[in-house]
Image (cartoon, rainbow, N blue to C red; front, side, top):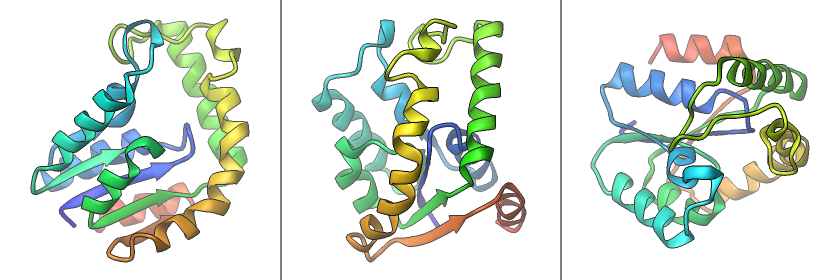
Length: 170
């Protein structure tokens, strides 16, 4: 495991796990959300986003988190391991709800000066609503998507306990 992608539904803990893996293995960590969300929540132009993924994954060893289709062909092709956080919907939703509340109340800066707001938490593309549009769809499509990248070692983690045990044994 030298080039690792961590995927999962919004709020599943991708970034936290990716940072932990990167720390344990002493590898650089890249967060696709940071490359995608420009100031004022403006999405990065696709060419810029792909260039960021391309530059980061051109190294010999790394950990990257994110589900973006627009650069999957780059990251997944270069990865050797895909770690999939496939948690039950109720767990992910609870984590997402508490994370959103913590970020709103604490006015936590995320990427490029962006902060979640109470009003923004209910917009169409906000994580809370995005969860309902993507969680079950991703659970169905991910196994098929991985068949297109037969070189990947796929690690499917279905609970927080399973993830903790896996990380401890890393």
